[in-house]
Each structure stands twice: as C-alpha cells, then as structure tokens.
Picture 1 (cartoon, helix red, strand yellow):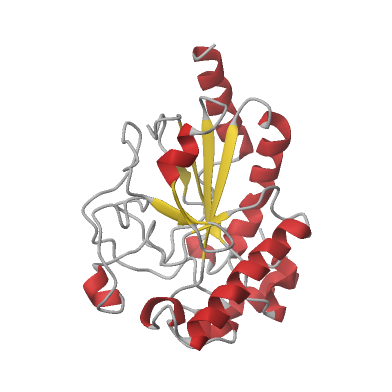
Picture 2 (spheres, one colour):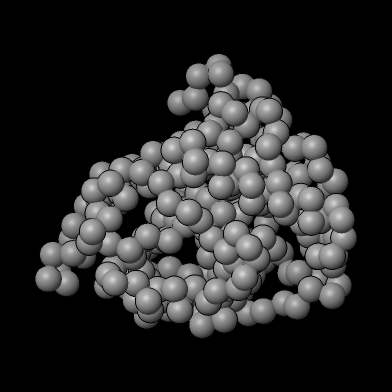
Length: 255
C-alpha cells in the first residue's frame, strides 16, 4: 500500500516484519486486566503507572495506542512523519480520526516504543536502548533523540496527542530479559504482556486497545496490520471502521 517514496525507509528498516519468537508467558487480551505495575514515562523521564493514568481519565472508555515512535531524527524517516515504523505511521491516521471524532467521549493514551533492535540503522550504536547503562552518554543521546523526534511528530501533525514512552520496550519484548538486556535490568511478570502469543514480528506495533478506567481490556486488541516489506507479509487485520464500530457499541452499552 506504500508508494515508492517510502522505499528508502522500507529498505533501511525492514524491522516491523522480521520474524521473532514470543516466549513470554503472559499475553493480554479481551477480559485481561492491566497490572498495576505497568509503567510508562513522560518526556522528562518521570514514571507513571498506566492504570493510574486510566483511573484519572474523565471517560469510562479509553483507547491505548502503542506504536513505533520517533526515528531519532534520521533523514530517511521524513516520508513517514518522522516515525521509524512505517506501519505505525500508516495507522496514525486511524488515531487522528479517532481523536477527532471521540475526544469528548473517549480517553486517549499513546505509548511510543523505540527501535531497540535496529538503532544502528538510524545512526546510533547497536542495541543502545537494551545493552547500554542508563547513565551512559550514548544511551542518553539516543534516548533524547528518540523523545525529541517523537515530539516532533506531534508538532508536525502526524500524532494528535503527546505520547508517553516505553523506553525499555517492556510492553512488547519478545524473549526473557536475561537473554536480551543488560544483566542489571529487573524482569517483571508483565513485561511482554501486550504482545500477541502468535506474534511473528520483532516489535508487534502498532496496536490499539480499548480499556476501561480500571485497566480492564474490554475487547480483543486491534493489531497485525503490515503495510510494507515483502508482498507475502502484507496484511490488513483491521481498519478505522472496525475500531469505530467497537467504540460505538461499547459507548451505547455503557450509556
């Protein structure tokens, strides 16, 4: 579905569709409740409990959008709104449409994840987000470039709201952290829980979740759209109409 203007980034980042295992034991779906330990960060690096953010929402239905965030300022991400993941860029139009239509009736939280397995393709050291200590200069530079480029995607209109961040890729990590991260990083039971059990992509983004104020997931998440890469991998698992139909049904049921 992408035209040739996206070829540079698609060749640089054949990342959203590279196969990877899914070894975590817990996978959220309809009927699951998000653990109180799930944490995101704001642009200043301050931690926020996801369920606490949901509890403070003025709406009893909320959309969580997890996506591949800023491309660290790399020139090859200009055609995808400054985002490193073309699939996330494609589905940002769904998020924009949802916010425009439902911002007075539904809460919205977006969570940006960095290109943890492919930072070297965007001008930074390989696996800098996973293996480098948080106080290292290289990590701090990559982190700031990621946040700045994601915030730039808000400024340019690609993203309709300021995101939170999953800087350590906890939401969708694919394998036990003892095999993937610096040894000092603490493993928690919820890490990887937002990843589908049968996910074959490295990252598993983008995805949409419909959640109530307590963190209860009310329908199966919308995920699996692949717009780029080898033609055999292209698929469209959901569209804007599917998400809006679910939202309308839930809003009607909740009065």
